[in-house]
Amino acid sequence: MFDPKQVRKDFPILGRVIHDKPLVYLDSGATSQKPKVVLDAEREYYEQHNANVHRGAHTLGDEATQMYQDARSVVARFIGGQSQEVVFVRNATEALNLVAYAWGLDSLRAGDVILTTEMEHHANLVPWQEVARRTGAKVELVKVSAQGLLDQEDYKRKLKLKPKLVAIVQVSNALGTINPVFEMTRMAHKAGAVVVVDGAQAIPHMSVNVNDLECDFYVFSGHKMLGPMGIGVLWGRGNILESMSPFLTGGGMINEVYADHSTWAQVPEKFEAGTPNVAGAVGIKAAIEYLEGLGMDNIRKHDEDIVGYALAKLGEVEQITLLGGRDASKRSGSVNFIYEGVHAHDVATILDSLGVAVRSGHHCTMVLHNALGITASIRASFNVYTIHEDIERLVVALGKVKQVFGR
Amino acid sequence: MDIYAEEVMDHYEQPRNQGELEGNDVRTARDANASCGDMIQFFIKTKAGRVIDVKWKGIGCAISVAGASKLSEYLQGQSLGDLARMSEAELVKAIGFQVNPGRMKCLTLPIRVVQKILES
Image (tube, rainbow over all chains, first blue to last red; front, side):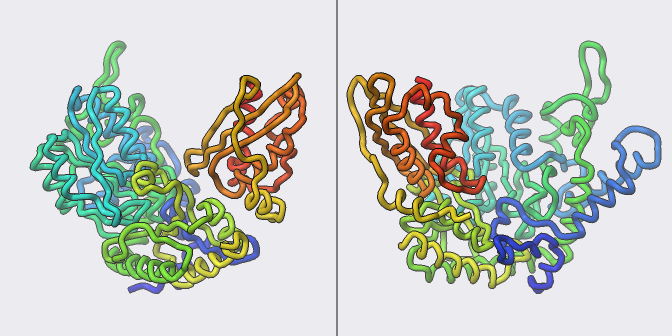
């Protein structure tokens, strides 16, 4: 096990002072902070190796191409996939749109069912609504129980509709729930569906192996896993990626171009039109190596410890209602709550005045918030640098809400 | 900056001019900040180009509720022409509350609603 207090020294931004108070950063679910090794890796790329990739017979071009491909290999190893199955995109949202447009538009017909859940981030719902609108397919949602779990009976019922596609989130960004993705994927495959897993909130906190999950697509962002913004990953099963049309077209993704038609490059380049984010790829590689240095199993232990501590401490605050399950072993990354009688944004502003950064609002999960019968909530979310003192500072800061609002 | 200044909290705890208006001389509009779940509706009664009564209803955070309350006071008796010429920034100034950039959309929610009425 690592010492998160030592880990904190690797993150320059954690030294910031906000409104004369040391920063307590509890918004890692929105974006994680970056260790110095990631920042250094990006800087070193631009200072020593920057050139465009896949072209130009010069040394820098070769170095940049090599670094980009190395990053792809590291990502593939990290999730148990093959290099050629790893497509670099901007973020998880773009990866899901890629699947929706490049796979969905060609594979879905009027009347087909797309099965997703009430728990999804808008990124794993809105693209499917759009594809449904264009193809005449229908979106069905698996219900969320009052305990913040996916209703497995409802899932089984809706699998009987023979969905062509099942899209599920591995860890909820708004409830912290860890979903039984492997079991759900097995059932979906038996029903004949292709399975897309949104791993954006899972991959920073636990070991992920796409072959163990048996899913067909897995997506995540670099910036939530200590990497830079602007780089994300779509992993897809090789034969499915091969069969798909391109998403974006132009330079970098072609084989041959004639006046009236073109042929496509091999995967994954077929899905990477235009100059890619090479520095971002270098950055995500550095982030993965940093995470592996701490050990993914240790990271999950720390995650569970912090979630459990936050549930216990916040549970003692009279005005707070916790959302989601109470068992830290079935949750990851965040604790969500509402403060009775005070709007989430007002709570967040008061916490900020004491240097405590949290997220407030619907966290891009309006359907979930409607299902739970609330308009907005407060989320404290964590990463490897979160310590017990952060939770304690949060609880103390919540005392000021009572001072200001008298409730 | 004290975003929850005494005046803000006073308007939040005791909002002014809450309610609804009816009649041919009443104009109304509503708007929402979807990401907050906030909703504000204004009713403005006019006579001879002037505001003669204002009511509003809605739900929201302290800033949007206090902002709507203070704005409803400011609007009383104003000329519609003068109000229509005011920019969003000028109306923020008229309300007079200090907020940080992240909360500006809370304060501008009631302003957007009133501007909708003025444009209609």
